Amino acid sequence: GEDVEQSLFLSVREGDSSVINCTYTDSSSTYLYWYKQEPGAGLQLLTYIFSNMDMKQDQRLTVLLNKKDKHLSLRIADTQTGDSAIYFCAESKGGNYQLIWGAGTKLIIKP
Amino acid sequence: DAGVIQSPRHEVTEMGQEVTLRCKPISGHDYLFWYRQTMMRGLELLIYFNNNVPIDDSGMPEDRFSAKMPNASFSTLKIQPSEPRDSAVYFCASSSYVGTELANYGYTFGSGTRLTVV
Image 1 (cartoon, rainbow over the protein chains, first blue to last red):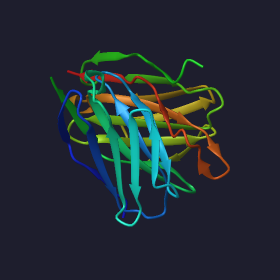
Image 2: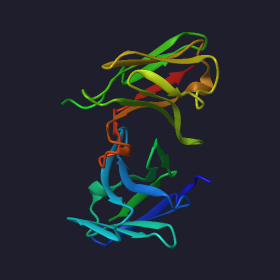
Image 3: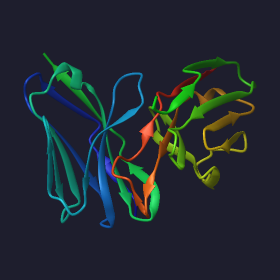
Image 4: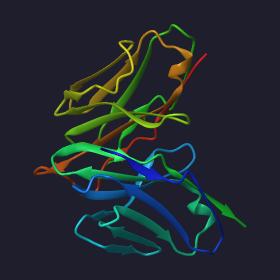
């Protein structure tokens, strides 16, 4: 079946690392994405990873993919107040032009 | 490119009235998606188009909802008559594909239209 699951909330202290987790069920997924939604705004592509990769790093962002466990994570180093947002995980499959979305994880930053 | 442009940003209407939401996708993108976002149901795909042709409208909640894409640069989502339970944020997104694979930049979303039906 098609299902992407995420925790609804994550609370971290400013300056700490945030790790947002996502599980998916379809092993044929080709790309996996992380989108960020700030209050009152649309979803913005943050980063993506191709299914033949295990890790991708982009400045403060690290994406880890465990295909065996169908687990995707997004690590944000040195979390700042500007990182407060909802983070959506999504998967796509070759030949299928729809993305399957998680419910989103709201990242709350404590001072 | 200015990105995906949606209008209006906010719409408040009375129950029973017709509402039309508009979207201009990124030039050159051949897929266009309409989504609805609510606290209760999260992000729901309503309908998507490929080269202006509706491909899958199974997410359209009722016959009160209709969507058109008369050309590559414009799409509308219409609700007639509107009801309070239609209150939500409606997003339009566009994308492009390389061969049969979703291009690695996924979808580009507009800023959304916040619809309130009173």
